[in-house]
Length: 141
Image (cartoon, rainbow, N blue to C red; front, side, top):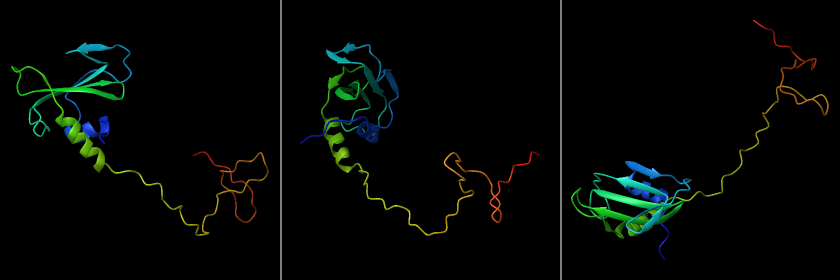
């Protein structure tokens, strides 16, 4: 099953766009080539585009991929492309997932707080004489 095209997979494939129009949170909806979007990413002079063309635009509606168009040069007309979807699906399969199996830091018994709270109102955090337990006031220079 094909995974949805994500912003991370596109950036992984093509890098950051050369120009953007609109934004993720832009409430203004635009239309181009019959495509409704609120953010457009423009890429120029791509060397390793999945479709083998140097120019590409990608249309987003908030976080959702809407469409992409490509053209070989400035004089050509924009045409729809599906190769980015296939390439992004392959990238999604390779992106590392975060494993939540990190062990806690081992307790070695050497931790010693700077101060011992005196009662429930005392938050500690000040210097304290080890022998007497009295607070050491900071002297101003």
